Image (cartoon, rainbow, N blue to C red):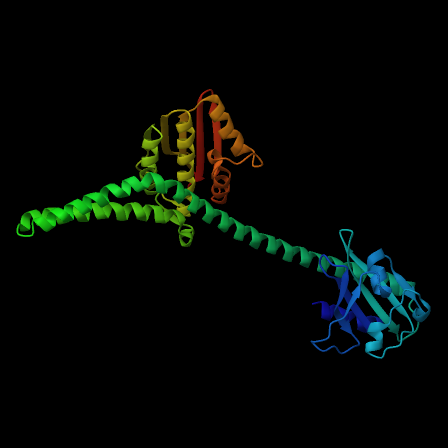
Length: 379
């Protein structure tokens, strides 16, 4: 630790006081972080403006000061020494920098065996450089960890927003699909009330109600799987099941956008180690975006294919679009700074999810045909 290093230097150079000052982040203030020769209570805090006193001037100007008569030195500030009743006879202040940025300074006061000399300066300069590297690396590591934590937090926020937005897009098209079985349940229950004296008919109507209620439950469960954040852990997942659930959710949108949808999914796809919810979101976002694009073009064909290629699982979405729609769709995906539209919803973020699964996502355009291909490694 810094305290141990300072104590070690204090013993080697046999000084009355040695202190280590570090510049506070994004402030022109230096804080006393370690010292030997003074007893500080936990409540005591000592700071100096960057540029004030010998250590402050050394840090601000990246220059060493050696003075064997510090009280005659105009840059000398004795406020900290006065607090501990120390009278300076000689002093040395060495700057510390990290990648050309002021980091702090090392100060030594009152060498007991005489004045400071050039040999002391050489040894202390080496020590100050080593301390600067250690402190700078530690700060950089802490900043990196903080950035990683912030990125993870933002990642989860964006993922949650994507889920909510996807569910919102599905709600309108699925409301009719939910309404149909609910009306069937209502009608069956009304008929059941009229047939209370006929057990056979009553059983038929109640079974119909249960069947339609199960349809609603399954549909709502599929939607719930999209946005539940607790299911983001990696586990062995059945890609066949995920793809069929996504297709079931998007079916109503296919009808609304006049899409002729077809699927060719290998029944023997191997399980993958993945976050099922995240793959569900990527596949569904691609289907919905393609549906929007095809709808703008007046309808058309949309094909999904899933198969194994060598050591990877491939999922391909292909369709034919007008040149304008195809170009804008690919360009928006490949240009993160491009203007965000409904058409580009979820595509750039989908790339991050697939990359996190050690996979790749490509968009291929040939004439009037466009394909989105996802490759995920089989482990």
